[in-house]
Image (cartoon, rainbow, N blue to C red; front, side):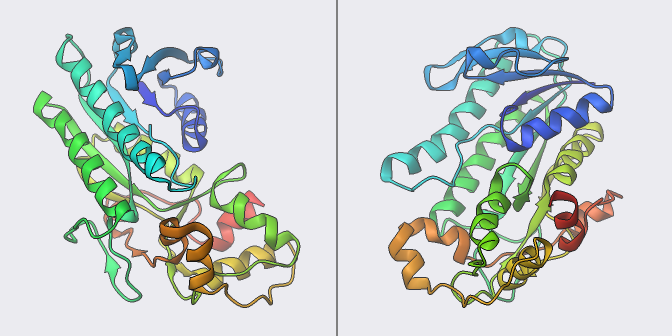
Length: 300
């Protein structure tokens, strides 16, 4: 198959490209930086600038599936300006791809788009599955709702659409693991709030394989991209400290302190999401890293 990947130079995109090439797929990718057009051997880069509505439509030549990962990180301070960027970076990139496809003869039959488990409301005891109703009760919930709505526009072009709602991505370079590892290395690892909030996560390699599986099989609808094992935040930090042979004795950091430090962004670490992977498992997808212990052993 031939893929067009947006967000290819990011944390997930780089691993996805490696897996795609190993499977023998041909890859095109989009980048805002002309200096990155040749960042990876064996794939072909194309320039785009979603803010200005610019895209090299040659990127779609012969493409079977678009894997859409583009979107500004949510891990920067949520100023009013940056919150707008979080939303528009997802909507504008999606809309530009839809508009481009509308204007050309293309071969695209499916789109697999990133989404996020942040669409589910925080709950200490609810197990969320793909059929759960969603509403705009928070900033992240509204972002994901608008994002998925924009992605659904591909369906009007007779293109199959699947959306992978991604949990915490664990990777060696970057992501939540790199952030939490720093204080933990100094024996200062600590949970946030009560520490009892649920953490639904996935190893970056399993996530890359999941995107390719969805593409190869032309999945349709919403799928939770999370590992089968869900752990509390305290258990997450405990296993991390154990893996890097550091003590874990710090009490959880109080909610008010986290909110004081980062404001509304504190929901990223204080919210509780127990998200089911049963729908993915029913598609006969096999996780290489189904438990946190296995994931940390591989990554650290």
